[in-house]
Image 1 (cartoon, rainbow, N blue to C red):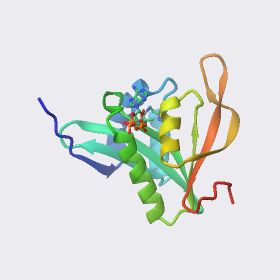
Image 2: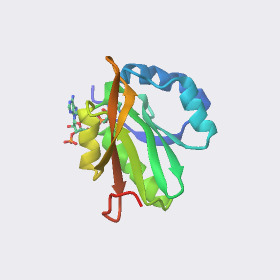
Image 3: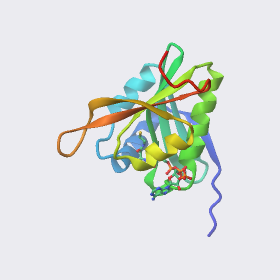
Length: 159
Ligand SMILES: CC(C)(COP(=O)(O)OP(=O)(O)OC[C@H]1O[C@@H](n2cnc3c(N)ncnc32)[C@H](O)[C@@H]1OP(=O)(O)O)[C@@H](O)C(=O)NCCC(=O)NCCS
């Protein structure tokens, strides 16, 4: 049967966290805990869910503003819905929000091994601006982070 997806964005609530953590655990090898999500909500970061009227929670993102720069802390699509364009829909919303808030750009970290995420960020115009050594936990020890930045003015070096 053809499923019609009718998605919308909503502000993340404490009541959403159990459902979010369940997705987090299947989407990541090193997932955030419920405490990480609660802290972000309490800190007043932009914590947004992507939902569908019938299917439920499709994904979520969390973003922190530091002066005039946004920092994307987490962005995740429920693995059952990955590869359907929702990551792209979410990135469009992220860029729209950052623009609406008058931010100069968006920073994020991504694992070099996360080819799909790196690819989608590049497609949206994020540019690699550096590396953070041993930033992530990994199976063997630590993994570096690629630091990427999106900016409107075409200048990708940090001011
Ligand atoms: C990264 C992520 C957000 C992308 O979301 P998504 O809904 O899968 O993204 P989209 O469907 O919009 O497609 C993204 C690209 O991946 C490609 N893709 C889809 N399925 C794929 C697969 N099984 N393997 C490789 N690439 C795939 C799509 O073709 C698309 O490529 P394009 O940009 O050339 O069109 C999602 O995979 C995810 O949540 N991953 C786990 C959490 C994560 O790693 N978050 C990022 C942390 S930095």
